[in-house]
Length: 429
RNA sequence: GGAGGGGUGGCAGAGUGGUUGAAUGCACUGGUCUUGAAAACCAGCGUGCCGCAAGGUACCGGGGGUUCGAAUCCCUCCCCCUCCGCCA
Image (cartoon, rainbow, N blue to C red; front, side, top):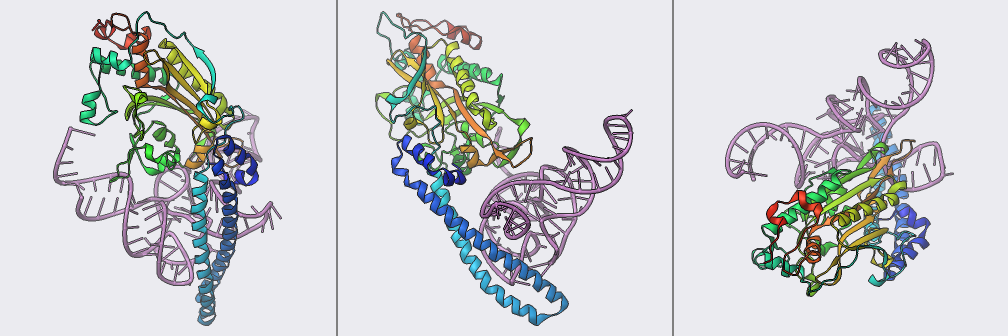
């Protein structure tokens, strides 16, 4: 969330940010925050001054009691009763106002960075660059689900029987290709990031910390009996790792990477765009996360973007890099790149990575700070994350891009160390 | 799941109703001393909120209660440890 002091002192900047995101209906939130903040501080000041009076009187009572002056003490005790009920009343106002203020603050998204292009729709995203040539075939290229079916790589129907739509079985060479990609991605990330095996379920505090709650509530699965959320992305456990902690400045930057399954409800999705591996309820992903000094976060964003791009380059897949416009930006982000790989069988781009800077927005929610070496108060860190990469669509793109006329397919050289002969010599079906 | 024991500052560890935000030790920072270092000695050393400031206020796992007054008493939840049960 944004800092209430910032909203108080720069209301116009916040209104502009909301407008740029197309959240014009929410612009009145700014005034509501300012009003609730004013009410809160007023009540707080009053409550504190009354508390001060009570504390002082209590001390006097203690002294009088010790001196055996019961009468004088009794008189003061009577006086305390009124003050106490006043404080109780003020306390209710304080909690109530705090609750409302916090609800308002959670509803205000992060502000777009100045380098983020204007615009509200997908069409306004800026293609920063494209890498690799789009392939042309002298035959009709198949979509990945057809290739996967012919080679027995993935079973969607049995997955639907056993779990439901969007929970496929990867079989044999399909499972091994999947595992090879995980290892390749994780090994690449682990050169610079500490490899982590995080919890796959998180609690509500963590889900709120990274911003999945309240604004993406319906997107996560929920285990009601235990209050657990199966992770929709490793971002949640990784970023919450330092929740409510103060780091040393010399600890920064902290870099984590992790491979996890991700579970997403994807309610309301249907049709051709969710066919095959395009959109699943369970998929695997390697995620990279950084906690940085505020002055470094935008440079770090570029480094993380290049890391994800290097993976696609190593896989020899054509892709493009999009800079998301203000309206398409995630709720918590100030700046976000999406990497889209070319799906040769579907003739469209598929998102396989999203790399984002959250500046101090998540850190404020999670209360993650560092102690400046020069002294002074602890400051909020900046958090970033990126997919490096999401698996299923990479599998789809690999199969489609490398398919041959005779129905066989090739795999890029970079995966050779991760595979064995049977997966490398794919016969025509 | 059952029984019992615990959760105090970066760490260790006192404190069972009244100037206790909290003794003491360690760690850390500054200073004195020293050619330098160590040792010794002195001082400082949590976080949030309100306030221009002085200062005030809150926090001893979380929440609630009793009391004029709670780290200390009561209720409840969470977490950790030990034993039993169950299990990969």
